[in-house]
Image 1: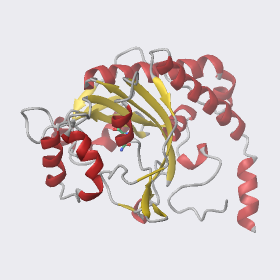
Image 2: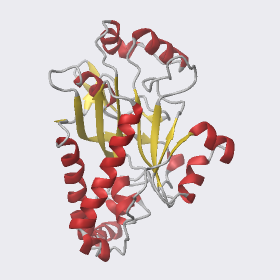
Image 3: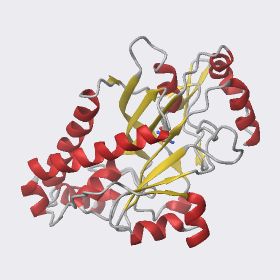
Length: 309
Ligand code: ASN
């Protein structure tokens, strides 16, 4: 019962209203920026035979429908690639809920939710430099909109939202690892005063390996400064059947669930593309100057939540 009272105390926290106003403005700014650039908006898909295998282990999130076993969406990655083949869908985005049943070892993380929202986008024939430039524009536009329309809320939250005049720097994970070791993201996020990109991570099979350079990847993360950590991950995509098989086998993946996806690739129908996905709660956390992701979501979905409601 105590916990229920605490929940309603949280609902009445003086910052809740300011955060809600900023949330609305952030969602409007993100969508407006891409709609003005002729992106088509899709609705999210919540269950499917396949979903993002992710780069780290999570508990399976699945349900049974009659004879079918369906996975709850961890990210829209494969549906983004497939949607790009629809007529007029050469630039797309989705505001999508993602379910990731994280293991208890990250229960103290201030950046993870078991369900979160992703602003996910993809461009047919896009390349990494084009997408990184788009992301920078999207972030700067969103901050400008919040500064313009939510100044009272920022004052209330005691948040001075920085204005970035310069381009976001781009580093390669190799150079950062050589200088700072495996914890480079954390160290750099603490040192930096502007958001920055890190390229070339070894991770999921669908991020494109640099053509002609085994073990190098045309992917990128955007990292917030001032210790706020990861904002976005994205990449150019693998789309050629032989290369997809190579990458999946390299990661010892079970190919069977991907039969339909692989058939599309085999027929040469998977487009060349690039895109990425921005964590909406993480963005809101940064904009509002909150340190815990729990503070920007009304209903608790942190890793050690007891799911009161
Ligand atoms: N949405 C990300 C991307 O587009 C993938 C992810 O969330 N794991 O690359």
